[in-house]
Image 1 (cartoon, one colour):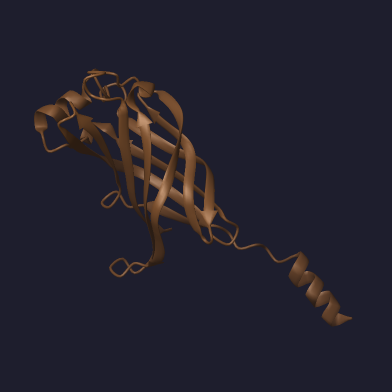
Image 2 (cartoon, rainbow, N blue to C red; image 1 turned 30 degrees about the vertical axis):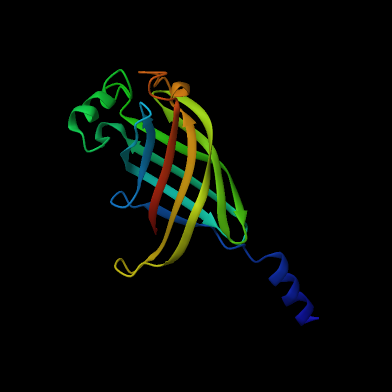
Length: 186
């Protein structure tokens, strides 16, 4: 009888393990964007992360991501172009200093996230975007001595959807995105 009660308590009343929460490392997290420049070359730029958090429960196959990017720090390697990207023609960083991505659904393949669907907000415009996870790893961070996770994910968006239509159609509408993220367990 005592054994049956112990088994019942173990099955019924044991709390499920909580999801792990990670803080995004702003030194190793950014979004890289790319676009065709007048059909001559592919141009790249980076948007550094300001802050973010990740919640992950591989056993339950749930997860959530929330990341804020700093638009005033957009960097392409061309200072004059960076200034133009911060202007009202593009990001209007004076009035819209950040862009955000907040996931609404995480799909898994095995124990690893395979895609993140969510809301991307740029210049006050929010649109659904799905990021396809191309690499994912969690483990002990050799330098920080804490559990860490890292991932790369890709998506394509239309810049005109977010009020970034300057120079259309000479510069195509489609923008490639790569989100590169590292996060440390809280």
